[in-house]
Image (cartoon, rainbow, N blue to C red):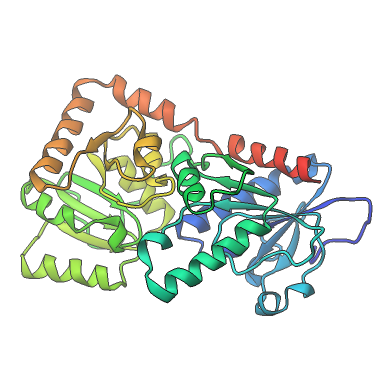
Length: 360
């Protein structure tokens, strides 16, 4: 139902899922799982759920929810957006904000990466934008204790912050996925990692690691049309590193297959508000070798083999240790799966529903 109805006695909650225009990115997948949950449970609520989605997805999630198509005019003239009782901004980077003061706003903050990535005018502009969002919010949620600490470091006066860990989309039992369509050598054991191929992901440190581990291939999935991706491609070619492959964007089914069949998941990232791939890999019972930087030590807990530094010999040793430990102690995989499965979307969204009701 476009825009919903105008029943005055029914409260209305708008969930900003405009990031669905990038459905294959991490935030896009989070938004998709929100839409899926609300479409399945909306008739259980005592308020209406309205979804702000790209025009192409209006109606896509059934008729139990209401739709507001995301439009450029709503960014330029926010007063044209219908009035809602509660507005949930599911991430801090959205171009849409509530206009009416009577609308209660929940802001979910995933990270403050701009603090570390931008400089000069771009930094100050991003900081001002973040300040406007923080000041507008009636309730702020961060996705990890690390993200909360980082937020309070820059905005020490706010006192309405709560931590709600991300939900994770788990593979259905028996779902095997499909081998990637890109050139893939299924005769060799392989390591896997995933993420936008950007400097903060630190994937380049794995190139020297793979020189020390010729018995394995490494597949790096994620958008790589970046200058950092170009640098990695140039190094692979110039240094003749034949066992590292950039896959680019992959389908959900391909990601499932890669998690299911890899020997280990390797994640040397420097900046993570949560580190969703770590939990995803643990849910498949795979050894995870990760940086301990930013939120990763918190999220990985005792189930991850952490890197103490980015020296190639050290990382290679941690990978081999992780693979060996999992082979010798099958209970490690069982414990990892049980831990990962505690990060459910049902638990995640139910806590938000409590917040919605408290603000209505």
